[in-house]
Amino acid sequence: ATDMLRGSAMVLPIIFVSYLVGGLWEVLFALVRRHEINEGFLVSAMLFPLVLPPTLPLWQVAVGISFGIVIGKEIFGGVGYNILNPALTARAFLFFAYPAQISGDKVWVGSFTDAPLVNTILGTVSEKVDGITQATPLAIAAATEKGSSAIASLNEAGFNLYNMTVGNISGCIGSTSVIAILLGVVFLVITGIASWRVMASGVIGAAVMGAIFNALPLDNNPFAELPFYYHLVMGGFLFGIVFMATDPVSCAATNTGKWVYGFLIGVLTVLIRVANPAYPEGAMLAILFMNVMAPMIDHFVVQSHIKKRTTYARALNNA
Image 1 (cartoon, rainbow, N blue to C red):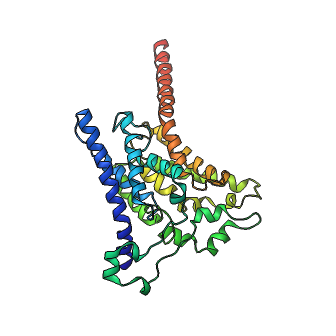
Image 2 (spheres, one colour):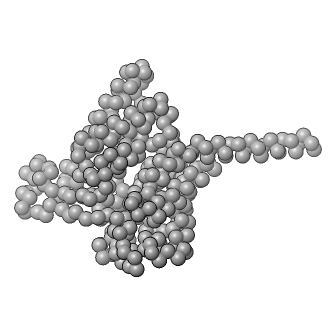
Image 3 (tube, rainbow, N blue to C red):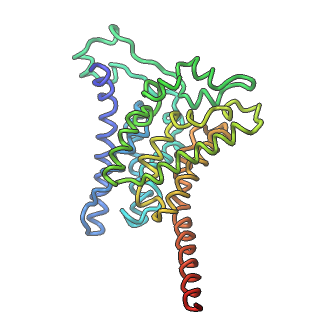
């Protein structure tokens, strides 16, 4: 109960600012365009805080959601016309504009001084530990020195498979607990809100790329030796492929396209993580890149179907 109150005191203000500022932009554009307020922003304004560190300044939350709503969605025409996921667009802006605050240097530093009300209810700072500042699993794996084992480095830092699955690790607000994400998978699939094809193909793509790196003789890159299932529980890949990549507006529309789209997200995520030492995450850039490629994927899928049907029709006529 104590941990939940401490966490809520840090997370709820971020969610509140995201909804407040995002809602104001939605109302403004609705008034200018003279149409009804679309409830789609409720999803973006909720997903955006979940991909942020809880110590991010609230003014940066406001700037980020403003960029995501205005630049990532409204300038394209609003809901249904955006080619990029608004929440990821907002996070990408913050990542490049304010890397010091969002890079993970202070991924979770919980202090009662950050929540005076909780401090009053539960005790003073001197009676409890403020929190712990430490690198994320991805940062530790990427920083493993040549000749050492990335798995050993993770275990030494307390990031074993169990902790990374349960979520008792440092990371962004919504991406640390695999169990919680899997519960979301069940809900989204049962209700038909998100495509299971994108999720499944994303995991397959990450597994294939991870296996390729495992097979290659990359002795100078310990990160490449990690089994593929480590990539599933580390960082934001699983959260991204479940909640971000499945956005029905910005992902591929055809069933075949969904398989290709998700598979390439998994491949690119692992490729960016292992091959680019300056950016050990990869999921955000992979999803945004495939958002841009999704229309082209659907185009080729549709053209392939047209070609097959044309060939079949000609064969019937000749018969």
